[in-house]
Image 1 (cartoon, helix red, strand yellow):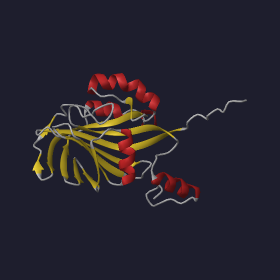
Image 2 (tube, helix red, strand yellow):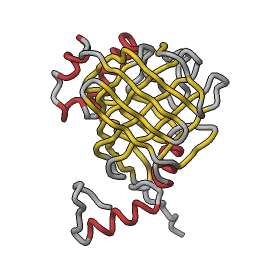
Image 3 (spheres, one colour):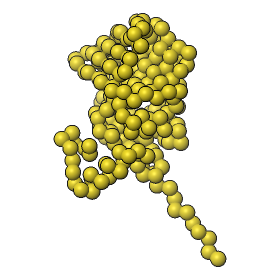
Image 4 (cartoon, one colour):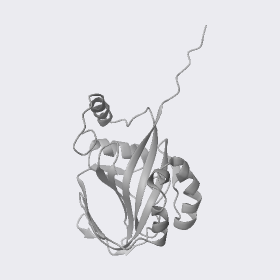
Length: 236
């Protein structure tokens, strides 16, 4: 009798292109903001927050994005709430549930100039990211390749600006002035740099099954089959 052979699991690599800001505060609360111009979910922003007692919180704008992020990283609680990020020359304004955050950015660093000199398509390739991982560990004390939640990830950093000041309140309490991201946040396999900064980044996440496990994936596939596209350049 012949044996049944299971087909190999399909893998898909999903790309998220945008910015990540990582800051610490004098209160001990550390905040990581993702602002994604392009992603499988369309443009969106999210916030990962770790309190001084170690409690890790995810703030995401939809259940679909919350499910995907929570399957990739580790949190103690997840809240679905509007997340708004306003960008102006030299500043970020973030509003997410009971968190209000304003960041002041400095001029591009020397490392930022070096990173921006690498062509975007090359910097975003997982193979390139794996090569730069030892350098990122040496210069920034971060990892650009690893795994979490049964998924593999590659962080292709393409630019870097220091954050020179921050004003933050959470649940009505002032979190204090800007401080190093210390201790490192514990959402996934790596933290953000200890020195607060904003990085331009392309994140690649490899998942099994070929698509995000959310209702959005079915909508996305159906709309592509019908040839429909929204004004933002993607499926609704």
